[in-house]
Length: 260
Ligand code: 5FU
Image (cartoon, rainbow, N blue to C red; front, side, top):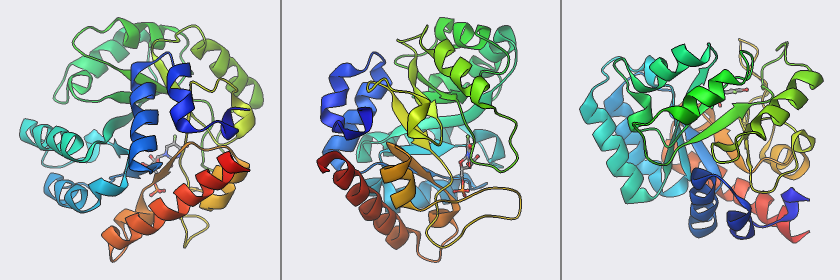
């Protein structure tokens, strides 16, 4: 069962270079925490990452919410990634036809393909989306977290949709880093990474349908490898202390999972 195999053993089972890097970072830094930096100021993001960079394996951005975006911000972000050894996931949730996605991925103001180690994409529009992301050339190593399930209540993803998404991903072993999903049964390939959002220690939900689970539930019961925490850290009074708490709690759960 993939959830009982330690990250360092899963490195060699991966066929995507970003998945290999991420497993490696998690094993060396002993953290499976992904911070979702959902802030609209680039200086606030950089300040926050200076404080919490040591605790995270991955930073997840929504680049289109930043009000003072600049190429300099990307440079600083990449520098912090190198300094603290974390990767960057742009949570763009591409969902259009392949041709449009390839433009959204590589062009415009953000030129996501030039700096994001990996991106998220929906399977809704069909395989062309993966073909397009795979073909795009102005990038080094890259990866895709494919959306197989969502955390929000009332989302329209069915069991059949999830299964078809996993089957679609299997055709692109070089490209797929893993799945954004909620359950361990969703996929079995130990070379792929389960990225699970919807975790907070002090809250059960927000006002717009987000549903939160505990670290124990998502890691031990539901099979999360990398856990996304946003407001639980970002909106707290002391993000640095909170990041350390989430990191320790999540890592303990992971250790318990692979040892038991
Ligand atoms: F695919 C998904 C999903 O199913 N649920 C999510 O919450 C993505 N997310 C993202 O994770 C969402 O866009 C936020 O950026 C983040 C969760 O933030 P929170 O503050 O921890 O709720």
